[in-house]
Amino acid sequence: MTSQSSPAVADRVEPRADEGLERRRPVQAATWTWEPSERWVRGWVGDLAVVDSRRPILVWEPGAKVPEYGYPLADAWRDLLVPGEPPASSYYRPRVPARQWYDLVVGDRRIEAAAWTWDVDALDGFIAFTWYPGVLDRWTEEEERVFAHPRDPRNRVDTLPSTRRIVVTDGDRVLADSTASVVVYETGLVPRYYLPREDVDWSALREINRWSECPYKGEATDYWAAADRPEREIAWSYPEPLPAVAAIAGRVAFYSERVTVEVDGIPVGSA
Image (cartoon, helix red, strand yellow):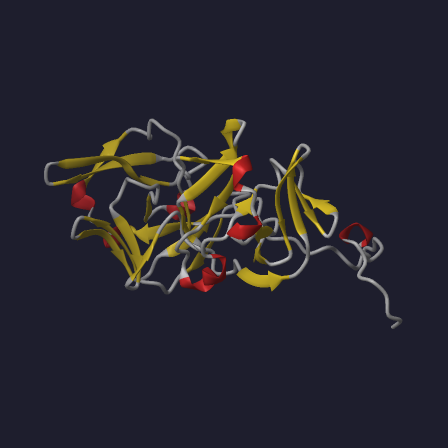
């Protein structure tokens, strides 16, 4: 191998098309799929575990990347469930109509659209509870708090330090320029480049009131928009991420779908 500069991403070499070789892609089956889980999963209202299962299953809707837990009916407090209506606002799941929605009544508290059963005969005997924020009080796997949605056991999230040059622009304005990023590689998603705060031009950004959560990374409580377009969020940060991705703590990432992110001079994503 002769010494030479690293090729650009745009010059990536790929195998030729062949019947005996296919590109591997994240599996998102066209049918309903499931697999067993060994995790002890509990959903809480106050100090009461309204669902408590050591034998849940993970259920994927057709084409879905994210699973949902299904619990045997015997593992839920069925006496607290009463038939109800679908949620007024859009929940994460289910994406297809449920067979039946249930409200959850605990004392004088009624939690609407807390649970549902799938309209799939093979899933008779199982019930799902929503993990949508603000419905149940909290979720735990074993003794660890979990949130957002169940984690896919085959999903990887890796954080790698990088000295590649990352330049972020919005039109003609440079928002950030760094050679000290931490790259987050997550199965099925585009890489995200988390930059040191000192490499960001803060005069070009405006802090906005926004919050999100990720079961793999934690709670993103810092968000920014372009200073001249406050209605469009373009950057975020995890001040206190989960231990597995501690390397991104306090760093800033930008949406490559909304601004231009160049990696060693090559744009990634689409602005």
